[in-house]
Image (cartoon, rainbow, N blue to C red; front, side):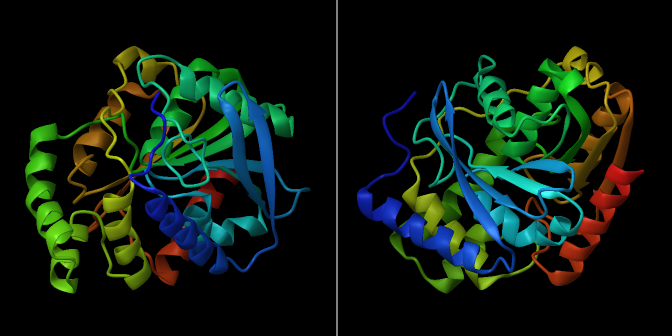
Length: 290
């Protein structure tokens, strides 16, 4: 594990400001919990009615609990939303990256979930968050009610070199000339719809975080077959990292009880619009209550 995840204190401060900006978008009462784990003190954002079923939600790489909550707030009507900040991938997370070669992420998540004492829990993960909730569900299937994966890492991976070639030139251009034009070229890899806050946040994040040296491995057929709970896998057709059609084909082939959705004309980051937020909340609620 590394000593820190930011290039400088200035970078960390900037990401703290982005966290607060996205949190300010949330029109909900929220609580902040610090959960003791074997890996350190974990920051957890909690929103919604505590009398409703718990839904544990894990954000994407280099974002945070606040970023995710700003996009899924409509779910708080039906669930108590529990959003841990992933170690090494959030300004509020433990400032060290856990290994993808063992079950460290599953152990960390188990300790966070234990703090809230549910008998079973529904899980929802985006991108790398999807990898972690999938890994946990493979290791502890008896603890998971239903599992939702949105553009998840670790089911199907496009060739790494293809992604690097698509990103490298825009990253270099933006680093040396952070203009709006170069920013748009850079975030076009990720964003389906232009959003000023998300775009400028991503531009800062790529420069502020130390680039992760390791990526999650692709799950084996056996690991996917061990997902005995109902699973909803949502993929994006224009996702350059985790191509939607191939991801869904593999999920259908190996996950025993899976529903799938292919988002059309969608990149890795789905639309950041009210229309999509309402659709996603309705789709997830339909699956969880079905």
